[in-house]
Amino acid sequence: MATYPNVVSPPFAEIFRTDYLMKGRWKDDFFGNGHPLVLELGCGKGEYTVALARKYPEKNFIGVDIKGARMWTGATDALQSKLDNAAFLRIRIEFIRSCFASGEASEIWITFPDPQPQQSRINKRLTSVRFLELYQNILRPNGIIHLKTDSESLFEYTRRVLLHNRLPIRWCTSDLYRSALPDEILSVQTYYEKMFTAKGFSIKYLQFTLPPGQLLCEPDGKTPETTL
Image (cartoon, rainbow, N blue to C red; front, side, top):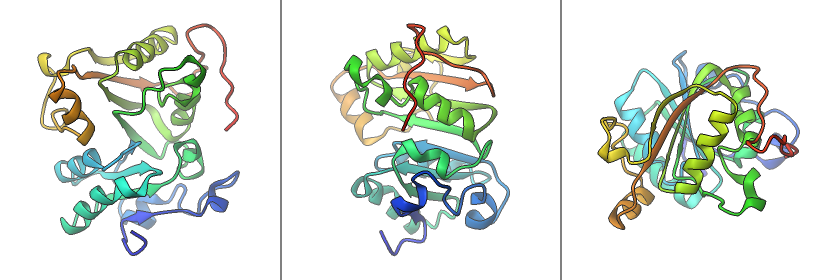
């Protein structure tokens, strides 16, 4: 993928405790327009990044993941399909603030992340307060976050975090395909989703917003360690 124009792989030295050169400039310098920017975090094979880019040419999309072998599938599809509004960024999500400026993203998709079920790994969950605070810094005011997961524990944990912090929940269902919600986008199935549904697992979906400047804490009342 080193030759792919739609894949960006910043050297570690450029994002560790510093800002990547594209921070705050993705719309103008990378995509060449002022369209809204949407991120898919932990994008895996990039199914949502590509599907969203096809459906919404008036928006820019970036799939973010550290595993290039998975990302290759979506990056190749986007390149062969000549989707000039789809790109991929190869970084650890912990360094997201080094790559995006305050308010630069309008939406975030989190599709089937590792649920990190052990209590000792709570800060590894992509919907933990540790990560929500990162998203809060790069999302526009009241920007939207989408979570799709097969994990009951991650779904319930995230719901508790939202309720505890009184964050606005726009949609919430523990069985997406038996609800009235699915549309062309929500019905996009990732590689992992196809495996889970084939095994009979129900798909959970949460859509919520992050008000700017709001202090967040875990449901037990403790503020988690935020050192990255």
